[in-house]
Length: 206
Length: 400
Image 1 (cartoon, rainbow over the protein chains, first blue to last red):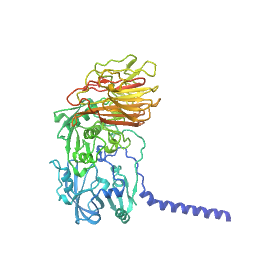
Image 2: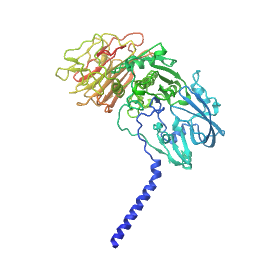
Image 3: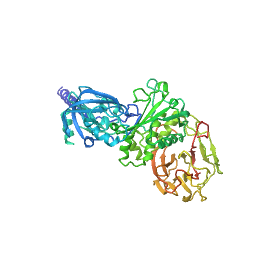
């Protein structure tokens, strides 16, 4: 009888250890999700574009290729226009924190297919911003083929690497775009349910 | 915690667009009458004509030509400069959303639109890519034309024109449709057979077999033309001669599918028309040597360049490709050679990239003059060899 009871206790302990291990592993599984190879995912979600790599593979390289990194709230869709390559969405954002660089409280972020998604009004994001439109247009728009956004060029930015430079914050947790939108499975960096404070600390430390 | 993860290659092969409803592979309804209209692509219209002709040289039942009538064009090609998308050099669509390709019932809707982002191309060229500007332009356009044909961008075979990232595939020197792309388009439209340049003659001991394993328009199947050496011997050479100039299209692709029974050597390419024997390096215009001791690109204008220090292995197959084009900015011929190892018959991506050489054939005849060339020898291996003509408007055996 005593032996049976001892065995039962050991089994209960093993079961407890097993459950604790599984529960403890949940955030790790959430965070360390391996990237499965995309079959033919393209920027447009249809494999119909050609991109220049490399896609930023680390937060360090993403930050290094960005002129600004900000935590921001999307206030409104300021304008939509055809940028030349696709329909562009020009959002007004309110900056709550600069993680790299400094600037005004209001910036405009332009997204659009094939490499970046539409944003949610009222949602919170961490944006890695490439360069102001004023700089980009000066470098690449010596001809008249560029379609300019309606917002001030020195305050209007695209995200670095398109969707690679956009992270959404939901209920205090940060997610990369491929976790939210499967068509961006070509992204290299996986951020899946990481606490916002932890993510910000990592960005600042990078 | 920020975690990096990288894609792991699984099955390695081309992919196809499919109809959302039925799952049917997407195809063009008239693949031998594909036309493009240049709306405003002024960045490099010369590269556009070369990219289209490069696809025409692929041994599949497709043909792309330009048209001056916008209303009947299969493809409308434009350029824009969009610095907000510096990572996107080109996009192809046919849907109202301008972002996707649709094919109700498996037939790709036309017209299709190709938009080239010159800002992204310029930004890429600023990074000193491993290729020439002309080849980069050809790459971008050929990649987008591949979408028109029904090939999506893929992330599984880096050394292919339809790979998702130009910088990765250019590390293999790929700027033209190569093995995986050719298998993809042939799976959709069928292999087209080919024999030789006009006026060519078979040397003794060689016969042309059009039957292949599956004949024309089979999928997947072995390429239908076999240049078979019927003589015994390990050091036998034969030539199929061409006494005309190189194609007036200013680009030519030659491809060989080699299935060696006994490896000694397989040479494929263009000779330079000199009287020297084909075994003499001085007689080579642009050739690839698939020998037992190494795989090389050989040209009297570029010397002997090692593509792979490992020689051809008996009992396996090789896909060999030569591309030459006249670079109009330099008035010189540029050549690229590619070698893949593995089967061209199956669709499961069994081929492996072996080597590439690319460079200018300095001193060769350039734009505005003609090179006298011969189709080089192919000896002691069973092989299928495809060459091109400058134009092709019908699909007949041997007319490609």
